[in-house]
Length: 128
Image (tube, rainbow, N blue to C red; front, top):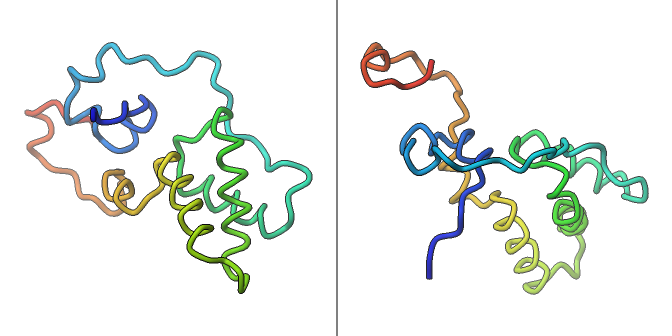
């Protein structure tokens, strides 16, 4: 099975576009993609907290991700419930995977935390 296509915005955040510029050269981000926006009005306070956490941790999300993110927030808010079992865990895991938010995906994202500038970057065309 072929690897899923990496969205251009996630490729930019993760550094994949820099690592393999030819692969992403002609890839276009969806036009008119709006920002993620505010949480749905009918969400609970716990779900809204989860929404804000995901918004901060997954900067590539946009308005097209809203329904999936809402589901992730519903499941995240229920994680402390006694009846949060294997099925709920699998559902949340599947949703997070589709949003690019699994631990494996996180290791691919370049957060830029405390990285020192490498003098060789000027010779190899890496952005500053």
